[in-house]
Length: 145
Image (cartoon, rainbow, N blue to C red; front, side):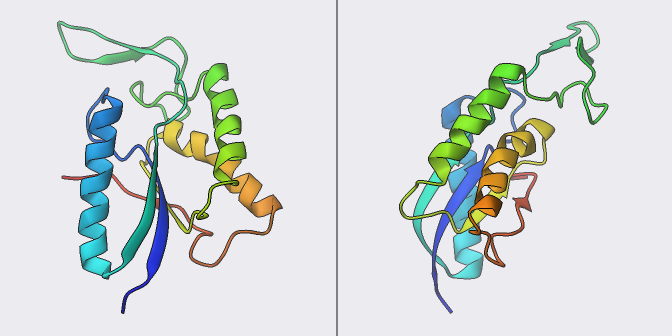
C-alpha cells in the first residue's frame, strides 16, 4: 500500500540547542525511516522550528539546568514560549493553513515549546473543519535514538 502525504514536522531534534540545519537533518532522517516503514510517498515536507522560548541557564560546574521562569512541565530545560514566541506561533498558524499542498500529517517533539508552537495551528485547522481522522492527532516523537 502506498499513498501521498504532506508532513509538517515540528523540531524533531535530539540536540539541546540545535541549529536549523540540525533540525532539518534529524527531521528528514526520521521521515525517511518513516517513509520506508509505511511505504508512503512524501509529496512535500515542511520543517518548522519552535517559536522563541524562555531562557534557561546551565551551571558549568554541575551541568544542571536552572530557569528564571518556572517551566509548565517542571523541567528547567523545557521552557514555555516567550511572548514573542507566542506571536510567532500565531503567525505560523496563519501561514500553515494556506500551504499548498495542505498538511496531511503532523509530527512534533514532545518538548512543551514545540507543542505550544503547534497549538494555534491545530486551533485554526479545527475552526476551518480541516481536521481529518488521521490529522486530528499530532504524532509526538522523541526523535532519533
